[in-house]
Image 1 (cartoon, one colour):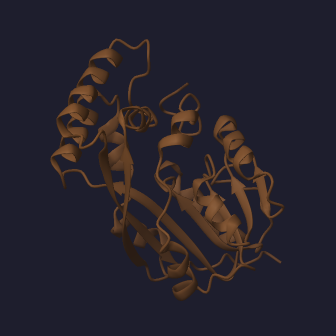
Image 2 (cartoon, rainbow, N blue to C red):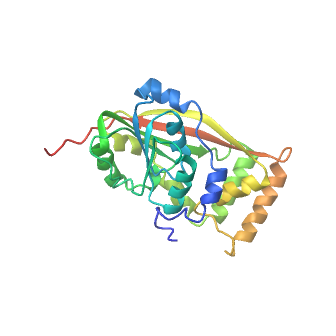
Image 3 (cartoon, rainbow, N blue to C red):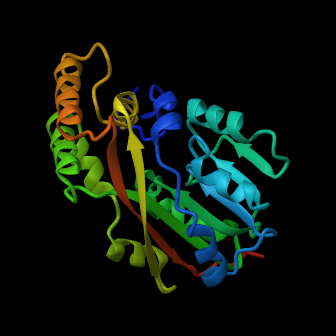
Length: 261
């Protein structure tokens, strides 16, 4: 696996990703219904759909959902989760070349994925597949880095042992960059609290779901896990620690690409 290839970074972390990554707050759908006119009849493309965490929300809402995911292992996990829904459609494709027809989609959504895209190529592709009046919705669960002593200790662990943690963290687009991406449409934002509780095994899985931490067999794996064990024992209450997030939603209507015909 190449750490420089975003489409393959998570191939060996699918199980941990499925079990230990957070979903998105219940307030997300009401926001999109109220602000963007989302309904159960809206056609949605989940770009970088991964294991189907975000796709599941829209599929259960009744939306026709096109899951675009280039990583075979992640895509298979999403299919295993949602293949029983007739409104779920899985495709091996990328953000830059979705393979979807022109003007076929009402909402382009991306959960915890946009920072892996080539934005200069993805924007024209999103414009191409969106219908007039369509929306781009970009979502991240952003860990609160120092809101509690546990979160601060976990952040120090990532910075110490993560192979390219700083580079990945810097790739998350600021609101200013996202505004440029959606120009000339106006950028709107919303934020909701989100959280997970973990026992020791859950916290271990949450750590190993990150693409930049060492796996078993790496010389840094054992000392990293020893530090995680120490952090857990120091901060657990009744055998649990709490991971806190701000779920940040960025949404807007880009100019839809004009047809050549």
